[in-house]
Amino acid sequence: MAATYQRRMDIAEQRVGGERMIFDESGDRTHVLNGSAAFIWDCLKNPLTIPQVEERLRVEYGITPVIDLSVTITRTLAEFQKKGLVEVHDHSVC
Image (cartoon, rainbow, N blue to C red):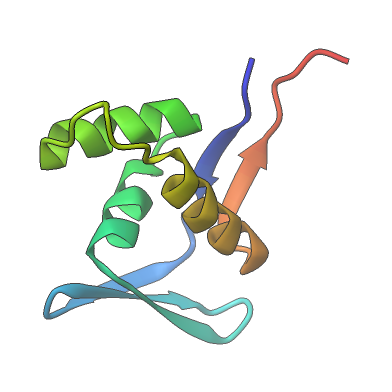
């Protein structure tokens, strides 16, 4: 089974125009998310795999399967992880 990603629930957020500001008080940092990153952030209220996030993006924005979204999603999740904004649960069997 693949890893799941879930956002930290202790992070405050505010919408500003078409962007989202999220506030990580534990690290005393503020981050600005563009529209697609904010959508991914919203998806991560519950644990999801990369393919599950990809499917939600396709449905929301009407993106055909011809376009590969996995690289963009993986990069966004890696940035979230690097900044300590998400929890990653590896469900692979050892």
